[in-house]
Image (cartoon, rainbow, N blue to C red; front, side, top):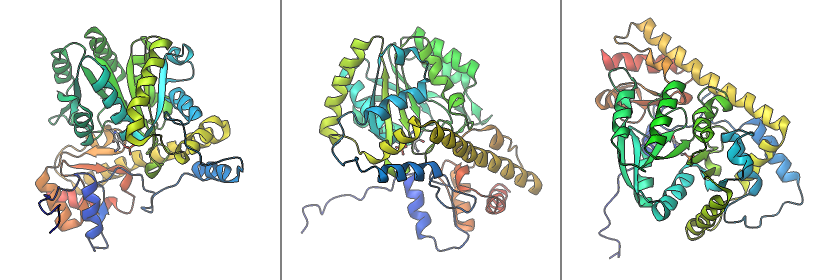
Length: 401
Ligand code: PMP
């Protein structure tokens, strides 16, 4: 008899489990809109040309070795990542009061940030938006923080519940950590306007909250790296402190390379260096030091202006294809006379549309049309193509009529 014989089977991950179910489906029309990974018009995963070039440069460089990186990762990568999100002219960078450590993509960077806060920050409550990316609650709870939510999405308008957000944060205890999606909120595709961000910033600073940005889609929302970084830069611009977790999964298509960064912006260089010394104590017993390959690709691209420019063009092409899918889906529903207002498909931003379809409608679409998505009605626009839009529109039409 196994010593593990009384282990209880755990449920599949609500997001990654969608792909497990999709893989089992034998229908030729099956469509996976569950996982947030970019696909081409042909439905294929995309390796950016600029990534291929960077890898070639790395392979040809005979001086490269496979030694361990330092605990905090690749120094160049860390500097360039901070510059990418905060802007080259950021006072926090110029005054050297920021510490950046390489992380295992966005998830690992969030986790390191959470673990650090649980050990060293005076307020152990983190407020996350309702709804949010499903992994946030687990990451921060297991890091040792107490997770509470603030209102974010209004199902009636399929837009931002700005009043609810201000009320909930307004009544949160002073000093709480507040998690903010830097852009392209997942799963809703709903972002505050810049004016609303400014009001959020004022509230956060007036209550001495600690903002923790999750930046998983820089460049993916608007097609512009700078425009998508505006909210983070607004907060860093006021001289206050914050954390930022970055992911290169989407914007460089480096999903499986697990490359990301955690930056902590502090008030002084001395504080930043002490914070970094403690981050090392968090990282060392977890995975010792991060992997070298993905971070080397990113650093190669970010430090070479030709490669950087080529990247921005490829990134914009991905963002534009997603935006075009929004228009095509909206048009297809309009052409079918599908009941309801579907304008939110075009208004929402980034990789996902929060359709408003309920879990019964989602289950119907999966059963009858072999379309896979999370049960909250979130669809990945990046998984759609001109060829599959009609099939999805048929399914939505049938689900709501
Ligand atoms: N945060 C958000 C909001 C996300 O959507 C994702 C990816 N789905 C992540 C973080 C982390 O992704 P990764 O660990 O692959 O970078």
